[in-house]
Length: 295
Image (cartoon, rainbow, N blue to C red; front, side):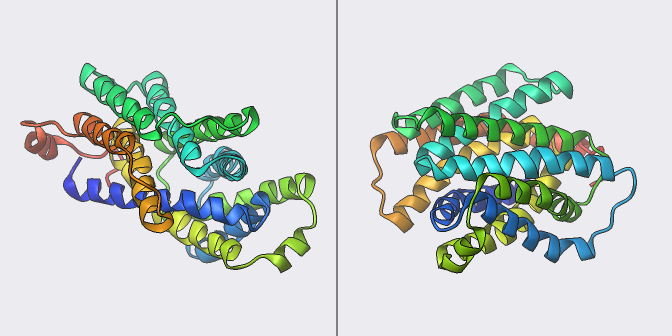
């Protein structure tokens, strides 16, 4: 992967690492599905008026609004409301093996021994990084694993869909997901108006950050990387997210740095290096490689 794209990927991961903390704080101040509805409304207002779609893109956007907007995000927010932040971040990383296996099965992307070794080392690093925390109750664990799976499914759909501008993806997925998530809030949550009147800086701040930074900025960059590079090369970057989350936790929350966190972080970085860097072939690969989408 070219250095510029690798740096963009790292910026996205940093945004998502902080997003875990923001979600945890936000759902403590506002019901999760209500927060999601407000997030999608803000994204749609900011993006849809400036993004057009055609008939070929519409079915894919509708499908992604279900897998991404109606399933991945709500399951993530609900699960994080009932799980410890670090453990939740670890469970969400299951999206990486899900996506890698789906890419091999349906997109025929080749996983050689080098990439398998990198994936194993990175995943082992996450386990060490977590320091063996106890899992949350079965329900939030299942919700977070399901969220990770639908994230992986959504990444596959983006890869095989007709070309859609990343900005357009973010806006129209949000627009089509609004009634889905709002219906879920109406069925499963109570006293939404009272919750809005009681919400403080944490809840409204979470709406703004998750909408602007995570949805618009981060996912716009992420979609573009997925369209330019194989899924099995882009998705493993998400294994760095717990490393960034640990550093942000130390900075913002005063969390200690134990030997398990240090050793796990080093293992994750080494695993990603094995997956993403082809020493001795990088220059030749850059000269020969062209994106199938012309990006």
